[in-house]
Image 1 (cartoon, helix red, strand yellow):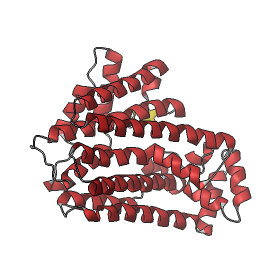
Image 2 (spheres, helix red, strand yellow; image 1 turned 135 degrees about the vertical axis):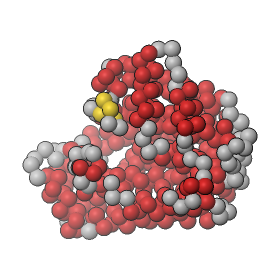
Image 3 (tube, helix red, strand yellow; image 1 turned 60 degrees about the vertical axis):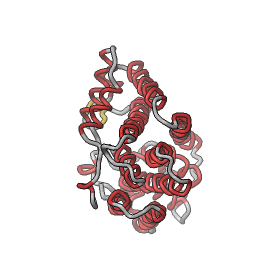
Length: 324
């Protein structure tokens, strides 16, 4: 990543603060929190928060950096709480290479631990400058995440496939939180309206491209590299960008039948993959990912040049090229 060696990024201090915030007197909650810290993950949202703050002129060691770190922890808490709930909803077996929390501890413990994370998030926000605005931003993002998750199931249940619904779903699943991760530091640091809008747009469009790329790889990826079975979305009756392009073309009836039976027949996933490749649906999806990534990068033009801005631009570029 361009200039990343010169930047403050989520590190041991971030992990220590996350562990501190997750501390509980209840062993099961503590164990789930320990799993979260130990599993790590890509920490994409905290990274976005750190880079956005540095693009606005904040740096590690400054008095306001502790607040930036708490925002990054808050973004990770909201993300992790949603994953605990998602795993239960999706009946998942694993998360980040570990047994899913609800498999290990049961449904009640998993759900309540997610709620515990949300309560700790509220306490974290209450101690920050501009806490009212930050609470509004986090609360709005949380509601959008919930709406996106429920809408995804509603669309599959009603078989009401439409671009409008898909874009709302992926905004809720991913982009609402990446937008929050880049917009919250601007609120904390009292940035100008132009800089706030630029970072919010970057986070939103980056998140949309990120989720579209994940959806593309769900159909075209190598299970050995992605770690997930190919065609999972089709088997859940979810119409993502490649299938929506197909539903707008001459193979609409055939693809709709696959979605409605949730790819239950042998060869359904391979057939949709072939149709998407032959019809240009894959190429159209890649073009939309590139367009969103360019929108993210272009939004940063109002920010002054810096290593942090260069790193954000590099992230957007890498999203266009990600293959797993």
